[in-house]
Image (spheres, helix red, strand yellow):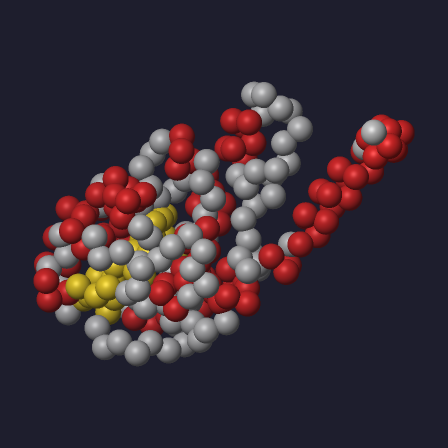
Length: 234
């Protein structure tokens, strides 16, 4: 099993029996009050959740435009959710920096770390590795009630309803246009956050567990009973 069609195409070169089961959210992790319903910060916030060691090149492609936009809007804060080094990549002005706790692969407090800004960014370099990645970060933003602005990889074209649950941005100018729209219309930002939250809820494991059940049932049914008994006897 793999999580994206691009991975299926890649591994299909060696094994034609590849099943795509997308990544889903473990919804009990995301039961905090979503951002679109409440926020306990005063200034408009744009954020990125992740580790700089793995995402520096992705974020760097938008950094010059984002830095310029932040300088033009001193009332906006940039949130480095999970790694303070993200500020150095963006070049966040000193008075506009917010940093949350570190984020690791198995953080159970990931929801609290993520739900700390109004708009979430998902910049991705255009390469085979990123095309094979799932839209998990955008799903996590949505589960927090945050609309995402994402590079239109195959997965994000599938997941984000452009202009409804977030925006697709092929280049920095499109990212800035989306930021301008949400910054100037906070009501729209909350509406899109609510829509993103509803979409994320539909991509939770409890609503799709049957895909795993069906996969293992079919796998079990396809095995030769005689060979299984021989294996046990051996």
